Length: 477
Image (cartoon, rainbow, N blue to C red; front, side, top):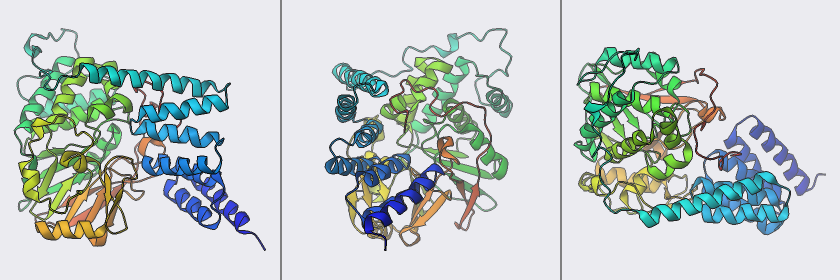
């Protein structure tokens, strides 16, 4: 008869198989079963840590890697994985300790030496930026004379005047599909126009769905431009009778983040009341500096483009209330049961450009649901997790049917949890070209019923995710 250790090892092998097939949740489940059978093998915890990294559950990954190190202080893979997880949540000092621990144990490991050096640079950069930080920096548009920028005679695209047109938008899409940029003058025009529009919208936009019309709610698109085009192909583009709400995380990771942001912004300018944008945790400076968007802006246009995008992101609304029944926000609910919709309405997001490490804005962008009741520490290492009882109280206290959020990969594209009161929608299929997930969106008609639509990934040119990231510190994740 097999021992518990042998049974656990067999479960680990099944977990490894699921991991190789990019089915991260199943891999986590097998590793968890292995640990339940035999919890003395550091490889079980270390392997689960790697699967958690793939699921962006960085807090859980850190905990698992730490347990592996407790079981075997010389288990190098665990130090490596804990370092990667800490890097992902921008805890560079903690990551640096572990990269150095790898180098001490494997002096010939050139990759670890490179990672340690990169991490040291990031620590110094963050300290420098904090030292010169200005509490109320001037607008990135302050000395930008867009009208004075000349569009050369040789520019072969449609010209943009003082208003967005469908002709310009269609030409822009074709240019992007062909691997071309639009002129930087037009980039500045689009960002400035949309920044002004969204700045004047409330922190919680409140909309309905009129008779004969529909609204589509999309989750994370993460720079996956060709999948965004597929949504419009399958479901119809924004029109007089068809509005869209994109629930944050338009940029980072995918290598067409500029194209996604500019297309959504162009539609927002063309149809201010026909396309709505909530801010996500990746519409923030810290994330953009690591996960590719800053580097992409610099590579395709220039640094000023990133700065004006950053300012426009800080102007975006944080939530949308649909028909007084559904609250749509990127992350989730709060650490305090007393929070009401009025608290969101009253939040002055313009006083706080970045979400920080605590407070209402951070929680709206970062939190996640959990199956257990109550609240728990974040699996990401940032924010918190909230249970079905928290969701039930919030919905009952605010007269809501459910919250709709994004922020997490769902293998089927969407998920309905917490007795139907917490809905997750994720619209980036085959996320980062590595996760075999579907994408989804939600169609809502005048009767305010939710219709879920699932779709697969579209082919795209051979450019890898995070191709424009400024450093390779996150490679290997």
